[in-house]
Image (cartoon, rainbow, N blue to C red):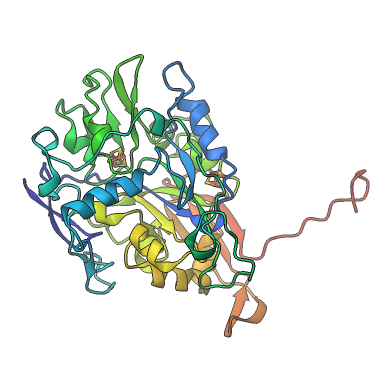
Length: 421
Ligand code: SF4
Ligand code: SF4
């Protein structure tokens, strides 16, 4: 297998194909701290792409309750178990997170799903994976709101209350779509070469005419984001709402728009964009792109299970209240730094966080205009100061999309309306 550089695990790794990177890459940041599991995203996707016969079990976008929930059931536990069996006790990271963009989270010394040779069978020679049973796809939101309680027992609540940095009773919502990975496992495993990654935006698609429904992609994707459709006998997956990304949505005025699941997000947890890529697969410096800022400057957003090795392009601001060991397994060694930064945001981060969901257009650049001091307090022993800065978002065409402020405006409803206070 050729060697490719995977910056998320800070080293070269084996991958069945030579590296090839798009000019821009579809990427997103989800702020877990804000998700309320309203499932508006899930339904926006379902009603757009998977409402037909044979797609009943398909949820390209889903939101599951961690740690017990999963769609398909236990997808992450199962692949973590397989990797552990392949490389017992050695799925660990060395070196500390650093400012090096080729190794920001340190180095992963364990084996990826492309490298876990011991477990690879002749039949699945390229990628370690498994095929979920039909039953495991049945329940998109199993164990909804079930917390880990006292002594780690499900639903046994600890009555002593909760305090950061870790709650004694906890759960959180993990919103997921296909990560449009830089080294897609689905693509690597397809014997028909029916899966491809678009050079213009890195979106990963299955050519429906080429697919013969062997389900190798379903077996290989560690996130289980390709799905088999029984009545057409081919596999399907998230298409990243590519007509919207291309600016072909009637509402878009020809400008790139975020996907349906992003646009529908009630909790305003989602931001999606197109990041500039270097020829070596790292992100090109783009200081005032909000995604670049959150991932590479503030380092507040982290990839989901980077140790799998697919270099997923979905990033998460981790939940503040969850035990750190659990989060480090899920998001890698950058967790402490990300939570620290999010819990005590500086002026720039606070302004960038206001950009979420003020528009459905893709933001290419932001600018901050400083405003007056509006608040000062001590939070968990630390002094914090808030400024009413204005943050301005610009689109692909360089024109302003919107501007918003850190202080939320108060609108007084005139008393001529019957329900005015
Ligand atoms: S998340 Fe899975 S389906 Fe999506 S690109 Fe990565 S490997 Fe392929
Ligand atoms: S729409 Fe947003 S807040 Fe609601 S479940 Fe989806 S990600 Fe969470």
